[in-house]
Length: 180
Image (tube, rainbow, N blue to C red; front, side, top):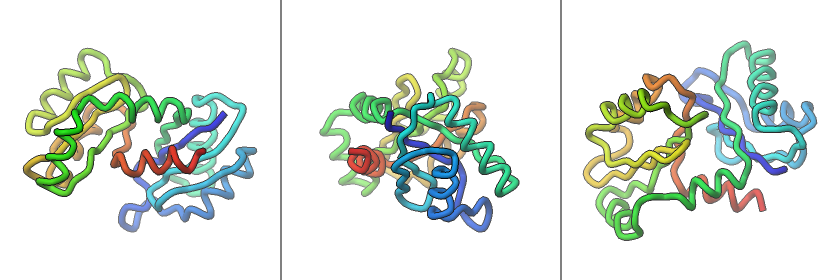
């Protein structure tokens, strides 16, 4: 089965540095096949017969053993990632207008699990000034009048108490392409 792993919070600044060739070696030594990485922010593609939960635990454990810090990992089957892309709730016109106005693409916050009703209420408060839609394990974000770096929701997502990674849709599409 083909998977993508998203490592949260690596290679941002001087902390939690993991070189992608080292990540490839780590994953290969754990028996994962056809390992590839994309960009320096912790996107890894691979094949395995294990399930996503087991893979998540293996990757987090190996990184902790080698680097001595905790890196939350989200593992999805490639089909799940494709479903997230296909479920985009925004129209082509909205996507085009946002890109035209700010230059920002569609962003997706991928969550490690769906939000409870209580967490969805918190999301609503945090996202008060953002144009977003929440579906299952994904929060889709468009920016019409400002950039992602000014998003309260993106900077406060940890308050929701779930692991999450933020990626632009171009990166997600490239990962799908690389997995083929």
